[in-house]
Length: 317
Ligand SMILES: Cc1cc2nc3c(=O)[nH]c(=O)nc-3n(C[C@H](O)[C@H](O)[C@H](O)COP(=O)(O)OP(=O)(O)OC[C@H]3O[C@@H](n4cnc5c(N)ncnc54)[C@H](O)[C@@H]3O)c2cc1C
Image (cartoon, rainbow, N blue to C red):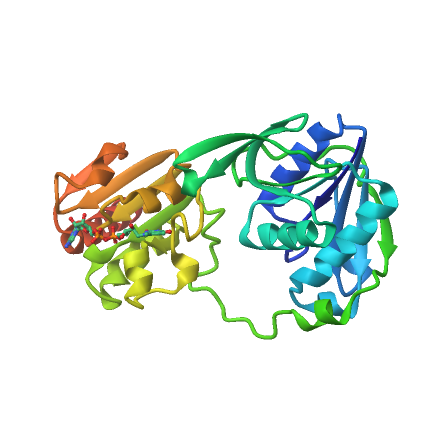
C-alpha cells in the first residue's frame, strides 16, 4: 500500500488541514509507505522539520510560483503513476478539493471529497454542508479522497525530517494557463479564520459595514479572527473570505462569538466544530440559541462594546 498525500503550505509551514490529511494517509498505508507531494517554484520550498511521512517529493516548476491547480494535479498524477500509489489524499480545503478534483478528472476516477473516516474501500464523508454523513464504497483501482478539516487529528511527526526528493513535472499548455495572477488580501487582521482559536462573527444584525466596528474591536482585544454570515457577504459589508458556513469557511475555534446571526443550517454547517458558542441576539427565539452554550439576549450594538469595555477594565487592573 503506497499512499501519496498532497500538502499545502503557508509561509513555509504545512497547513493544519494538510497535516490532518497526512495522518489519514499514514493510516491508509499502515504507516509503511507514506509519501507527500508539495509544489513550488524552487526546491527550497520543501517543508522543514518532522512530518508523519517517509518522503516529501517537491514538484519544482516556474508554474508553481502562483497557485496553478491543474498543473499541481498533473504533477501529482505523474508522481502517483511512477510510484504506483494505491491512494492519493488531499486536504478538504477549497484548494485541496479543487486540485484533487483535477486529479480525478485526469485519471477518470471517482473522488470521495470531505471524508471523515476510511476503512478499506469504504468511506464516510460529509455531505450537504454537514447536515448528513454519507457511507459509500469507492470502486476504483486508486482511492482518491480529501479529508474534511478537523475530522482527523493532525500528527506533526516525530524524529528525523523525511527524505526530500525533487522532480520537474511535464506540464501541458492548458495546465500552465490556469493559474492565479492576482491576490487580494483577506481582512482578518492576520489571524486565519480557519485556524483561529477565537472567532467573533457578525450577521445581518450588525446592520451595516460600519456596524462591524465593535465586532472588529472585540476581535482585536481577543486576538480573534472576524467572521460573518452569508447575509453579510451578500450585502457587500464583508468579503467572502470572512464567510462562515456551508459555502464559506469551516471553523473549529475554542469559542465562537456569533453576534446578530440567526443560526441558519447553512451557517451552522461552518461553525459546528466550535467547542463553545456564545450567541448575542435580540431575539430569544433565534435558532442559534439551540446550539449555543451561552447567550446574551439584546442589542449587539450595546452588548459587544460593553464586553470590550469590561475586558479593558479587567486588563487595566
Ligand atoms: C445553498 C446555500 C448556501 C448557504 N451558505 C451559507 C453560508 O455558508 N453561511 C451563511 O452564513 N449562510 C449561508 N446561507 C444563507 C443562510 O440560509 C441564511 O440566510 C444566512 O445565514 C442568514 O444570515 P444572518 O443570520 O446574518 O441573517 P438573518 O437570518 O436575517 O438573522 C439576523 C439575526 O440578527 C438578529 N438581530 C437583528 N438585529 C440585532 C441586533 N441589533 N442585535 C442582536 N441581534 C440582532 C436577529 O434576531 C436575527 O436572529 C446559504 C444559503 C443557501 C441556500
